[in-house]
Length: 286
Image (cartoon, rainbow, N blue to C red; front, side, top):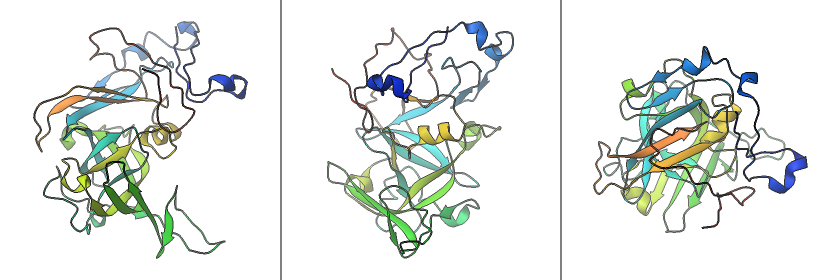
């Protein structure tokens, strides 16, 4: 049987948009059990499972690590890839981290050096002209300043950052590049992010380099992976636990999964809560 969780449903189902939608069809209509159910690629730190049939069993999963009151994932950006660590934040949608030239952005506190945009052959800043009819690549709430798309974000605990928007190759993986690369490039996306030039507050002293917003927004990585045909379903899941110590080398404390459901870490039946928000933050009653 096929079980589908839908974020976007037809207009005829408008009253349940953003909620749980289930439909069941015979498995034989959608999958070749003799071949596709056996297709699996396993990496030491990140796992990619490619299957056909819409069963939520085609997914990528990677480690989460313990931060200072947060959990963070490892991403690889650019050509050749440079390692960055980002807090996974379901309450925002921007992805941003310090780039070379970011002054006082806490490099000594973070897991990695600043991203060196000059060392990536695929890095490109988004450009714009501050005229009504001029070409503008800026996305979201960014402003056109000096031909660059400038954005900023302030968070409820008081910290903030400023950045310019850029696009480069990006994928989620393990702490070591040799264990993180998917040779087929199945989950490498052309992704727009903020190249930070200024930070304040906890962004300076946190363990992770930057932040990755995961709210229900078109600019988030799950949505981009889905739009670019990298994952079969526009969905992600977080499995987290708390560790009592942290390290720049990484203390594993959970898993991040894109595009499907990885039940290998489950110790009990899953309990579901309905998302009552149509957009923005995931919202449920407890």
